[in-house]
Image (cartoon, rainbow, N blue to C red):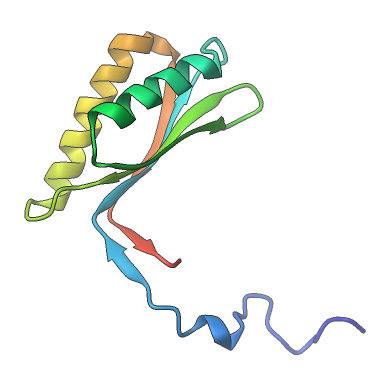
Length: 119
């Protein structure tokens, strides 16, 4: 038999237990858009964000469902300020910009902060 039947399904090889996790003051997530928005428009929008705001550590466009695309991001929350307040300000500012530019074609989001970085 190729599998060890005595190992629990959710076991993690011991080599991974020594990976130090770091809590990061980042907001991470996806802004999701209706299928009416071409991915090229999202790329242009993300490129504009990247040029204007150095706090974006990562921006990318990807498919988020059968017929939708989204802008994925990692955003550095500035140090020395209340994390929840900074997260709320980021969300409010960015969602307002997206609603003004895309209206009801902003289909949703999945955003969280603070994050635990594994690797």
